[in-house]
Image (cartoon, rainbow, N blue to C red):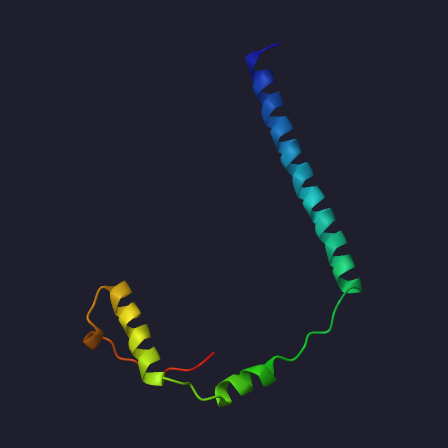
Length: 91
């Protein structure tokens, strides 16, 4: 056997293996999509939870803002006076 035949067979087998992996992943993806459609659960509306979080008052707002701004200033390597906080909302 020549050296080029061995190299060609090696490269050919690698690419055939890669093509088989791609085909297998597409088949499994299709199977998962079909099973996902059958088990579709209606999503619950999360808007009321967000609305109630906004309506609640933040206790110790100044202390929380001071702590958060100190952490941000430390991470950025700047002074707290260099930061400008425009808004602060409870999520």
